[in-house]
Image 1: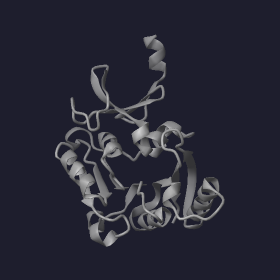
Image 2 (image 1 turned 120 degrees about the horizontal axis):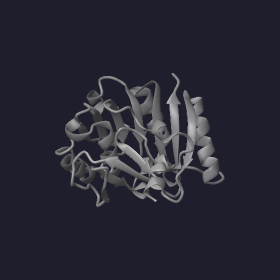
Image 3 (image 1 turned 120 degrees about the vertical axis):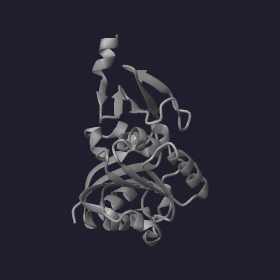
Image 4 (image 1 turned 45 degrees about the horizontal axis):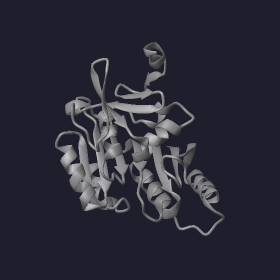
Amino acid sequence: MARGNNRRRSMLSWAVMKDGRTLWTLNAVPKTTVYGESLRNFSGTEFRRWDPTRSKLGAALVRTRRAPELLLPEEGTTVLYLGAGHGTSISHLHDHLCGAENDLSGRLVAVDLAPRCLRELTHMAKSRPGLVPVLGDARKHAAWGVLLPRKVNWLFQDVAQAGQVDIFIAACRRFLERNGTGLLSLKAASERWTGEGEEALFTSVEQTLESSGFEVEERIELAGYEDNHVLFAVRKLE
């Protein structure tokens, strides 16, 4: 049985593991959980279970039809996360990007509009160096853009605001390198739409992204983990 389990286990990166359909990340702060997730030792190393029902990025890693590792940034780099929320996805991304005591010299700039979320992110950052919590509006780059003097190669957006697509396009144009990866978690209910339902909305969004200088590499349905959500994985062409 153990041998069969090992055949189903694969490393998506040095710190992200897929065991069957379950995701785990190597815990950068051993013996500590962030949101009550399970801890488990694999070959003497502690991992945290990444719950895809509480993380759009986690759900996308499970649902993607491509190699899941294509959705992850390169470890040790600087990334931008818009709509950081309470830090579920942020914590697992930090495990991969920075590691314990930020041994990899990564930098995760996490922007959110809610003071409560910022308090939780600031508390998390005390034990997770490399995490940079920012209280700010994803649309107002002038207020926090100074934290990103150079463009990044990976940008994730999960904001529950009207005009999500416009916010994403503007952020990618300002902060994402050419050929960089942009991930847009789109909630249908947050978009103003008078068309023929969600499918028509998502198709329209895909066309808008393509006409704005992006190659849509995949459209990932998150239903079952996050209903009424689609994650668009794009490559910036210009």
